Amino acid sequence: MDISVLGEALDTYVPEIMEHCGTPGLSIAVGAGTEVALARAYGVADLATGRPMTVDTAGPTGSDCKPYTGVAALQLVERGVIGLDEPIEAYVPVVNPHGQRPITLRDLLTHRSGLGIGMGNFDRVPPPPLGEHLRRVLEAGRSDAYGGTMVPFWAGPVGAAYQYSNVGIAVVGHLVELLNPDGVTFSEWVARHVFAPLGMGSTAFPRAQHPDFVPAELLDRRSTGYATLPGMWLPLPTLYPGDYPAGSALTTPSDHARFVLAILNGGAPVLSSDLATQMVTPQASGGTLMGPQAELSVGLVFNVFGGEHPYVGHGGEYPWGWTHFTRGWTSDRVVLVISANQFDLGDFGLSDRPGHAAARLVAEIVTAWVHGADPRPRRTLAAGRSFLAGLLVGDRLTTRLGIASPPSAEDVARVAEGAVVSLPWDAEAFRQGVGEVRLTATPLADNAATVRRELPGHELALLARQLGVPGLVTHPAGGTGARAAGSGGGQTAGSADAASGARGAGK
Image (cartoon, rainbow, N blue to C red; front, side, top):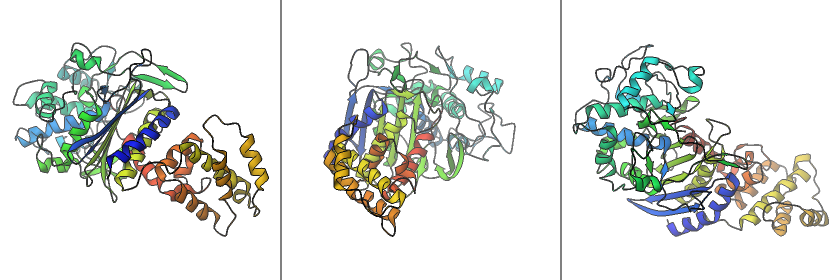
């Protein structure tokens, strides 16, 4: 796989993706084998000053740091300090009132402790020490979401089902703090035993992303986060998660890629091969923020996806200004990490809002490259977009209405020349697209074959969104029947790994 080809594709697509999604800045790293092979940054880290986004710009990970916490805990398992299947209540008094059995470390790392969804217990001031914070939260027994009025603190019995929990991962962090043989804080243990061995010099896992807890040089490199709505970029005040082992880390995509590559390559120098393998292979059925889904799997913290090119994923959001995305192909040993200074305020808890959409559209491009395809567009994006518009017009003037005769060349030319468009336009490509559509004995299948031949799935994913017809990618009968183009499956999987992080401290 030629990494320079991927770089060319990203340089072509990413500016259009950011424009479409309203993303101020985007930083990307791709790791291949054992090294970070490509790093790119686009747009700005701060809209007010114009400070550019660079590959050294740091950003909050939100829930994408949960695997750091998982590795820290598994290091104690390696040292014989705690067992993966040992009940934790001897160390932290967390007892599920629904029973069936005590909670284990494995339950927490697979989100099967019975603890329900929470936002991360954010506040406008840095949180107290972790033990004090968890004592208050566990005694209150209420979710922080909408003041405890929306979801239960305990969602069900231990081990019964996947239920994503920030509090659960905070408990894992507290176990690390209580039991580590160095007698140091959670943040210090992770710095010494995870970040330092991997050379992650631009990463910190503080109690709070605040001057009292983060080196000034790193905090100065942090991008400004924006809460977005269409046409609006709002720099909201900084918030701090009390469940901080679930979402308070700060890193660069290149640093995070080094971490994930280490796990995919057997764990060294931070984890044994056996435990690293367990992290990225199915341990139980998984789910998303919306709850359990039997077709999804979870390893230890990571979400696990099968197929010809199996991969693991996670992601995160930090309210209200940043999105983080990770995908790692386990057999191919390729990692993609994306950081954006955007958290869209619409469609809360779903993965199709702009911040997530930007990351998933980039992931489609990298996925095509991992699968051995040339990810560069086959024609200019203006021509591709115009061609797709032509296919849609051709469908509406013929096959959709069952009309056998095609529109005349004069009619098509009149439309192309009289079109008023807000995006770059290619009239000739539009005419070609209209001319590709005919009423046949199997029009949906034939139209889908045309789309598959002319528009690669990763390109269609962007163009369809730009034209306001994203259903072309996933709907079997949508427009030209483009699900056969092969984009649908990738989008579905992308939604799952983007959605299965945390609310608040995570997603």
